[in-house]
Length: 242
Length: 229
Image 1 (cartoon, each protein chain N blue to C red):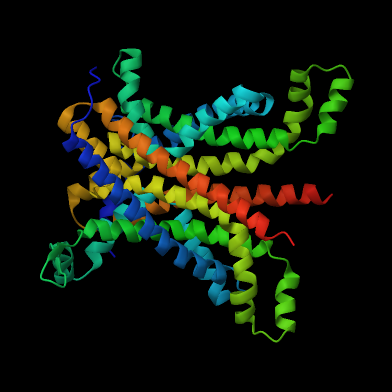
Image 2: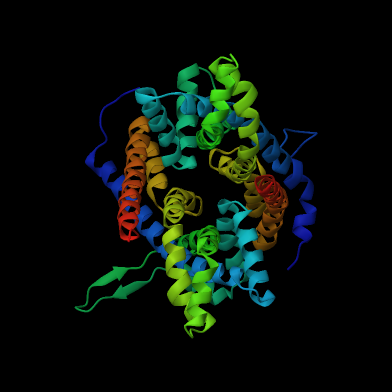
């Protein structure tokens, strides 16, 4: 086994993959958070027409593998769309920026990657927020209602902000999971960090170096989020002191 | 929706080419999950006890070691074990074994923290009482602390099994013919009705994992009842 370093060209591939991993995770986390919030509120509702579908969604997305979900959206869902739309989605598109510069838009697999990862994450994020909602004392809501707020206002201005604060540490854990899970999108051809490390391995046969660089990049990202979490936790702890 | 393609391949999806060939499909998924669950339980138990009983530098080293397995994607770990195991043992290691190895390590790392938390959750008085009765530290752990801690850990173990079963799908990447792999094989062979194929496969996973998920809520409810007493 040889231990000479990877050339700048191959390091470039890995860095490129790393940016895609970060961007993909960010977009999927945003989608997952918005949807997760809606799901958590719906799941906590006492109205069966709201909580039953939310419950079913959460159970379905939590209890099936992300890989199968990716395959379902990429192959299955796509096959149900009209043919012209699929052709258009699979074609290369350019965005013309002001000033006449053209920017190539990422392919269909990136779109599916973000959506599938976001939908998957939303089920887990919803459960964390719901646990946060249950952690807010019932008197908070009653006090808000007594002050003349509608149930929606009480949820929006009193209960939800406190619930999100309680749920923040486990939520950060879910965002870390999104970053780690984004590696699965390589199965549908998204050229993120794991995909890039396989590509570099095939091109150079420097398996150890290729995997080591991507492993370090993953660990650094997770460690950074962990530190951020501890910082936020400490700051919020101080903020909640009278 | 046309599920005839699923019915035509249902044998292959459930147990691969067996009995005329190697085991595959859902049966291999269960086998892989079973082996990894057992190995990760042993690993998680030993490492968890070590984490709870150690102090100072040893504990920090152990935490960092476990942190490594929790910080990298399972997929990356499968790459590593697929690459390193043959070098370490100098023999050709089948993909199945390297995936089982990676899944056991990840599962063990997560379970170790659950086990350590379970042990640390037992009141100090239990330790003091055991030691004052003349038990050694190990005997207190074995006869007094662990039996009580087990009850608290049970939901974590079942939750870990659920993750494990879902993670066996990653064996697809190194060509192990478990459920997800045979599904994509069938999909690329027939080229029609991919939605039906993957819905069927998702339903199989859902039955297994959803059943375990139900078990977790039952366990939690029972734990709540014990706590109320």
